[in-house]
Each structure stands twice: as structure tokens, then as C-alpha cells.
Length: 330
Picture 1 (cartoon, one colour):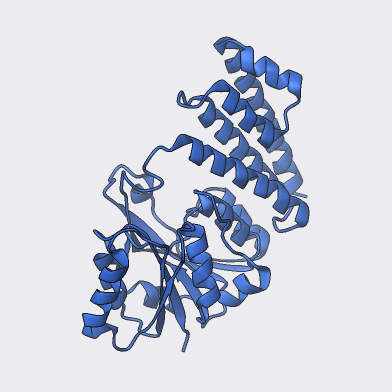
Picture 2 (spheres, rainbow, N blue to C red):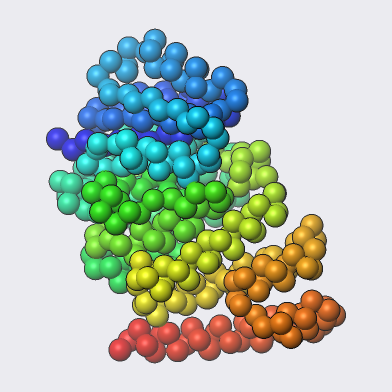
């Protein structure tokens, strides 16, 4: 019987942790290993979680592992700790302020082709933000094989970026050392793209079995602009490194995806008033390796000149996209 390790990092979630734990205890699939990683949470989250599990009769037939960091290391590090301590055939990441439906793991396991599929993804619903585009989209019921087909599917925007609700074969992660980049936020943008470049089979489901609770006070909901953009520039640099060392396949679609990520990142950054021009162009230089004269021009240019610059960049990316499409047909 397939063993699934559910990895739950815990940090400052005392208001939500009981609902998260209860959703795990309610699973119809019972061959579970539940790994809780306390990332040195300063509130009562850790004690609340342990106490609730200990008192619940539903926890008796499940295997729980409790791991604590000596100091706060961040979400990526907590997930990596869970990966290292897991023994399941599959790993499943669940954020401690979210929930899963009672049939979630059973549904994913049932569609894993008896443990042969590399990654199985379910649909999800955003709770607390009904305007979310994902709530209006229908998730697809499909099976994909072949790495290029999977990468194509991902970069076309038909699969979500977040690591949660993706059930992944543990041996695949261990063999290829596919861990999360530590010390950054938006780590899922990097990790999910790397994962899709290293698998051969993917199953996606229409069923919305993950409840993503939107919180304005979460890491992604609170605008810490400098941390956000510093993290994302590191991720873009990691894309460049991965392209060179072969972790990311040099498909035309992948290269175009990386180009688009850089362009979108630059355009968004250019609109943020809270970051100075000097900081913006330090970021630009790191990502695009702009020469000094070009950086100088952009730094001191007026808005009309900057807008002309973006129009030129947009046109260049469009032409490169057409070239990639031609290349991909060969």
C-alpha cells in the first residue's frame, strides 16, 4: 500500500493550525505519515498542534513525526527538513494555515497509476478571495507523458506554481536533489519549474481538493517590496544557473518562459514607488547584466523614454517568441 508523507511546516499559525490538523485527521486514506516541522514559532502553534493530535481519537492509526528547528530558518528550510525525514513513497506539502478535503489524498493516490506517476496534482479553491482567477478556472483531468510535453503544459500557465497539492514521488526528489531554495520567498516559482523539468509523467485532476486560505497578513499578502524583489532576482539567477547546468532543459518554450519571467519582473518592479531608482537598476543589472551606459541611460531618463524602452523590449520578446515557436516545430 502506498505510503504518503504529508509535510506541514509550522510558524505563527495558532489561529489556523487546528483546522489544518483536523483536515488531515479526517482523511479517508489512512496510510499516512504526517511530519510537523516547527520553524521556531514564537507563538503557541506547536503546543496547540501536538495537544490537539494527542487528544484526538482520529490520530491513533496515523504515524506522526515531530521535528523542531533550533532557530527560524524559513518555509523552504522547513520543507527541506520534512523531505529529509520522510519515508513515504510520495510527499505532499500542506501549509499550516490551509486545509484539504477529506478525500484529498485518496483521490491523488487513486490517480497515481499504482505509484508509477511522478507527480499528481489536484485542483484547489482560494478561500477568502472570491475574485481569484483560479476560482473561475476549470482544472483539467489529463495525463501527460514526456518531459517536453509537461514543461510545455506548465509554462503555458495551465498549472499552478505553488508546491502544495502536488503529490510527488520521494525517490525522484532525493535522486535529483530537488529541494527548495532557502532564504527566499516565492520559492515555489523556482521549485515547481525545476520539478517540471525533471519528470516524465504528470496527472492533473479537476477536483478541487485543496483549500488555499488567502490571508492579507501572509508572506504573499503583505507587501515587503525589498524582500520580495531581492528574492525574485535570486530566483531568476537560479534559472540562469539551472539552464547552464542542465537542470532546466533548453527547450525553446523553457527559454521563452525565463525571458518572460524576467520581463514581467522588470515591468512590475519599475512601477513600485517604494523602491528607489538606484535599487531598481541594481536589480536590473543583476538580472539582465545590463552594461553601465545602458543602466545610466535608464536611470536618468524621463518617463516617455522609459515607456519607449518597454515598448522596444515588448517587441523584442514578441519576436523572440515567434522564433521559439518556429524552433519548437522542428
